[in-house]
Length: 254
Image 1 (cartoon, rainbow, N blue to C red):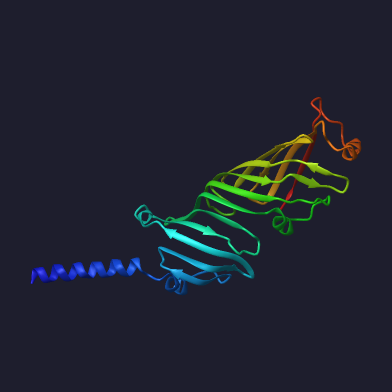
Image 2 (cartoon, rainbow, N blue to C red):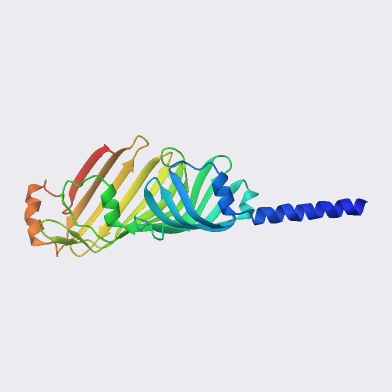
């Protein structure tokens, strides 16, 4: 009798483990308390490894989603998955990396890389005071981020704008790649950006506060190949410093 009980218990454990391992992702999605704005269609695979052919947030198509959950992380008090996302999205946003949720209540990101065309960003950003023609792609690299309202409790990463020229009403200005490093502490985000080309060199520091106010300061310095048509406009600016740098400061609120 004892052997029968042990065998029955063993079979039960195998059955439960197998059922969990093969738990359909669609079943979980159908019963999960997802936000009303979020819709997943074409869900395939299991809760551990699967995909959705389309993810929508409100009326916006975010494209495909693929995930692979790490079971071992559950033993450390977190749900963590490797994801790839964005193929076919309206914003042409694509990316990959590690997303997780600590059972203590903290979502987090690790080694996430995402990119999208700068034109898509401009469409969703406030109007610029000067009409500029911008192109290229913006690539976001998040080394680590722990979420806390409204932004993050901690974060570290960089943003690279891969471009060549900025079109102005008077002339095109060659800028080359623009690189910015950022950190976040208690939802205060600090960003330091710079670029250098044969026509212009510049740098800027931006601080975004938890109340959505921002402070920025920076400078630019014309180089030897700075366009002549733009050089004429410099006379309307305050005089540069002894190094030939023109400074600027902007404060506001998002």
